[in-house]
Length: 270
Image 1 (tube, rainbow, N blue to C red):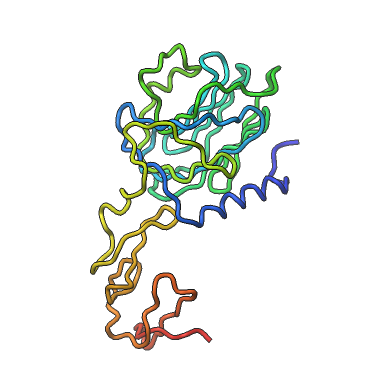
Image 2 (image 1 turned 120 degrees about the vertical axis):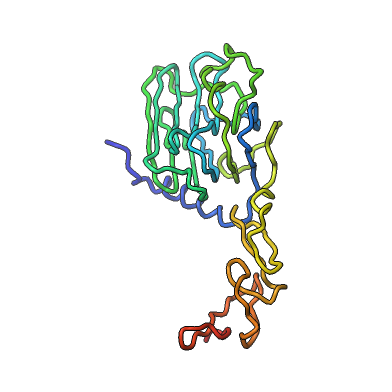
């Protein structure tokens, strides 16, 4: 029987992971520099495990993730190819490749998950799943290396890499947020050429009239509460509004009252 999303546990797993994204999350900013990389403690994906992250980029090529068995047979490589996510993996020298239909180089935030289950590996992009499967004699993946994100150190000997072509992959440029193994945050062991926070998204402050830029779900937002202005970018003058302008974190938001095609103030619901 072909792969379907009939499995209730799989649907629940994806739903929970998607739901977890509605919180403030920090991450890594990759500048696309030569010999950039972030190194995380080994992901034990030998039999069953999930890895999830959020991704934001405007480039069409770059290395996202890589680990292997130290130059023998097994590896997993996640990369950007022509703006799409490509997953290549090998178990006992039996290799498979999965490519998403959807492009992600649109500067929007995307949810990505790699779900390992013995010989089957599923790539999930924004809730859409694409499976890959191999049929070797061995039923598990050997994993020796730590997880490399955004690039691989160029001083690693090619003979020590199962897929030595990763050394020539273009470095990733963009943001990787909320990286998790299952529900846990992995330990960052080291990095080079990588910003470890999301301040870059607010460097060019999009907020007008003295609004304060902050990050929510990996996206820049504007706090207009101290400006006398409202709107997404604090660009709408509220001097003509009556009543109280709602604060950013009010327990409820008042809808704006509209008369003759113009907004004139805020009204309390009910």
